[in-house]
Amino acid sequence: MSQRTTTRFLAVSLLTASLLTTIGATTAHAAPTGYDAACRSKVTEARDWLKLYGRDPRTNDPRKVLEKIDEVLPLINGQVAHQLLLLRGNVSMKCFF
Image 1 (cartoon, rainbow, N blue to C red):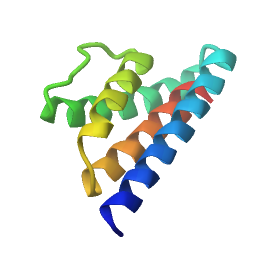
Image 2: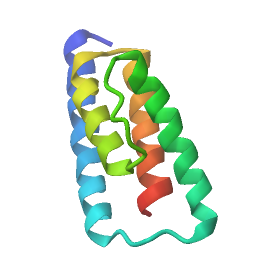
Image 3: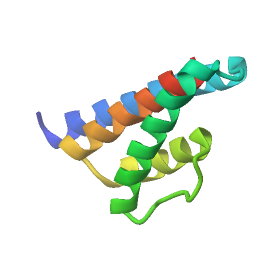
Image 4: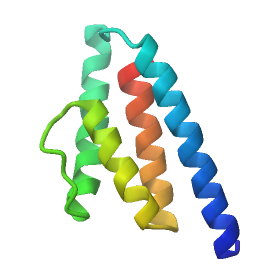
């Protein structure tokens, strides 16, 4: 994959993830208790990754964690960016859907 293709893929992925989060945030409601542990687990995992880049949001609020992931993603590429995109999707799915 060339650098240009990777950049386009990352941009499209970010746009799609942002759109899904926006849709999810507008329809989000309090998750049942059974989902709380899964959400906390993914938020904690994402925070651990963000700490490596000095971007820890210092909160367990999933929306703040997603904002910080969005800040970091344009700065990196490759496998780490892919991992953060997966984590972003996991946090969105476990906490908002």
